[in-house]
Length: 71
Image (cartoon, rainbow, N blue to C red; front, side, top):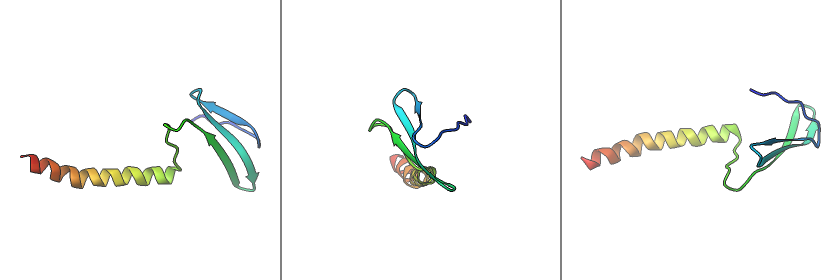
């Protein structure tokens, strides 16, 4: 993992087309702005993990039934 120090108003660029800017710092809370192309999905990690789990569950249930119905 790369660790960087940034101050309010400073940014970093990822892959030439994603910009992450520190918008505000108050105590232990930091507001981060992300500018990315529309085709690049951006999720909070807990939401991303929920989506992955939901997709995995759907694939296990519906996918297995669909395969059984083929034969």
